[in-house]
Image (cartoon, rainbow, N blue to C red; front, top):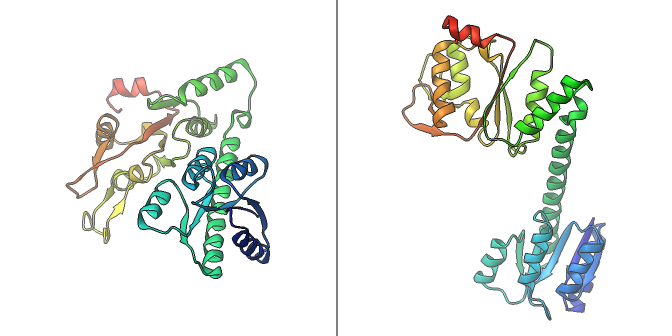
Length: 294
């Protein structure tokens, strides 16, 4: 992995270069902040070792510029002018860690290892998010007919909106795939996507799963449990076959839809959530409303 050393002291550069090579990584060097930023433009850098006291552009300015360029860049600050104030400021500006001079070699390398682990995790998360985005891209929904093209247009219109979504269609037509496409093209894409199999469980169990419960709320509730709405906070909840939800549960869902709040079973505290509801059904909901079953 590539590690950039930005420091105007040649001796320190040499020491860090040797340590980095011993770890099997590639050292890149710069003597000023301007040179360091130029290296970042040319090279793929996994971690930056940055001295705060630099000629010309101050290290704190360099830190801010690096973070503006790549908010996920791992930056370890090293300086002889150690103070709690500068440490707090550096960490506030996004530094991964802060090491004062003089330092022990093992201390620096331990921090570098941890920083590179953080970089790997961030890269893996980016790759996973991209895989999810591609997995639920429109190209993976089969169909090129005029009606299907209209479906793609509707997904593009619905995804960025804040409103809840109802998807109608026969069984096997890909309603859940459409729901996932809406979620993964929305502003909530990095939040959770939680699926609720609405018709596959009794009403009391469904409510426990949706809203959670506190200890002792019912026989067998030996511990408190968070519900699916809490787990989906910041994301989307997909109700598969929402027409199968009992009327009593529907009234409680209405409060979540209107007020964005609920209470766990057996609890008294109101819990606020930020979720988008995407529902699907193959039922004729208009007829069910007229019959009083929905």
